Length: 367
Image (cartoon, rainbow, N blue to C red; front, side):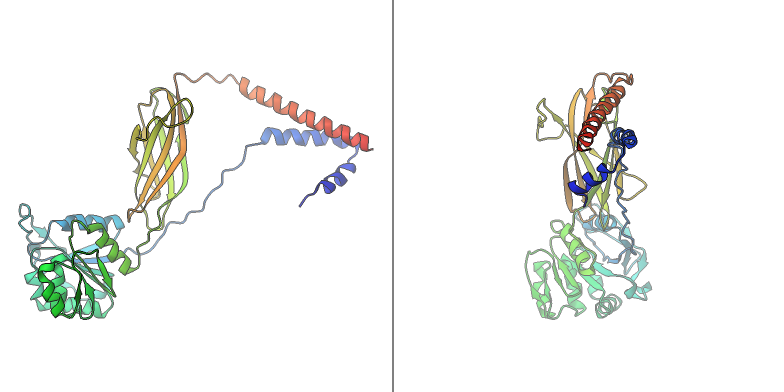
């Protein structure tokens, strides 16, 4: 550490011809103040093999299947669909919508290539629960420690496969006797239950997100940390009216970013928000990097604005970053004549000269 005594010692050794050099160095430091390279964060994206999940459908499958698939797609998982028949029909909840699966159950020779198997919701699952191929596949998956899950009435298939003996389960209460006869302890109308490598859920519409999170937890890939903000760039920060403003956001998250929103708030003359509701809520678009997002703010009136960033990762963990940037909208930006830079240079030089002369006087007195 440099102390006051050390500074005095070195300065006493300066000869008069060095004073000019000292003043020059001070001037250079003054002119260059603030010109500092921005701090760069080395952000390595989380690179792993995608989680592989096998979705098993039966005749009269539930329409929630499409929403469930959307969630797993958001996770970035590799999805394979299967059934006893190449095409299965939907339940009567909506107009019959045939679903064509990727592979037949009989074509799957190695269930261990999947991280998880999930039996989709539906009306009764009578075909699956009475088919030896389906039951053998489930039994093999459980034996090989693949995560096996079932939605609502699909828990009946697990009971028929005799893989829930001693397990805590939930499911459609109409078939609770079947679960208990298979040796399970049944819990009615509760959130999804994880017991070993068995995951069960009920109320597919209400607990849809929680069930997918439970499966991800059992697989070992779920995390509840929200995204972190790396940088926000607003260009330009001072803008004339009727000029678009670009917002670029860089984030960091282990599992990936699902959505980023930019919220714009108008400020009053004292710098406080005029309303708790944003003037604009702009969804930013993903750029070439999976962790970079960009968007455009338009139609800003003359005034001062503050920007919040709301980010969600693939598991919908939310992070809110308040007042991370601002925009000033003016009627017209004055032309740059260079006077401001000239004044800054002169004032900076004068300040340096005063400090230098004071130091020179002090050293001369010491001599």
